[in-house]
Image (tube, rainbow, N blue to C red):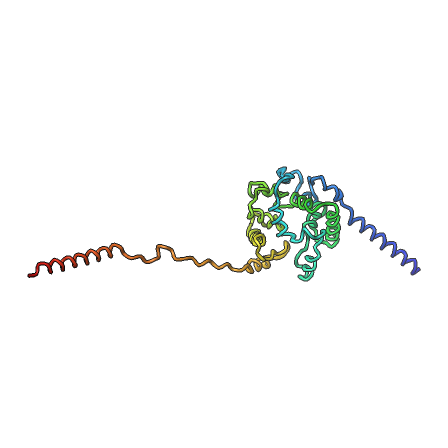
Length: 285
């Protein structure tokens, strides 16, 4: 009897493991599909809006569009080791674990997996499927293709999907014409696009934008992770070293100049006195 129960338990465990494995790999279309296809409506778009009313402005960056500046800002803000990891950043995972789980550690590839296939749920099973899907995306696609898909499917505000639509909506330009401050602002919008963006309650976005710009210009300034709290952002801002103002030379107007008019009068008076003295000496007998 005990042996039979053990066999049944083993079969249940094996069947459950097989179903879990199939579920982890069950995404459609498969990651390799995105090598030469553009997503029209992703899982996140369907959850947020109806795809018919989504503002994308037919605004995918063209193949030759220069989005390197925006890509650089997004990497600084979202995933500093994007070019070197294989879908999962184990350094960030370790740091997140050390922080007690109060911060996230999702890479750009994991965010793309969530946007294309999944939901914003924080359950352990959804996170596990996100990690597996991210690794499959890394195997199927190049880093440049992953970044292009991410910029094209990311949410930048209510109903605003894709970098081109965000650039046009907030700044009236294409992604290739964004300034450094504008590109940093879009990158800083990604963590909370519905609650803080360039058009709505921008304070939090602006604080994060300044940190991204400081890092872009070479400052050793930590950019808090997307899911970290506002106090950490404030602490990061306060940790930026104070720049002392330069010592300027005195302004020309403040230099004391001699009174030329008074000097001229004194000179004239001295010459007159000298002339009178000479004249009187000549008329003496």
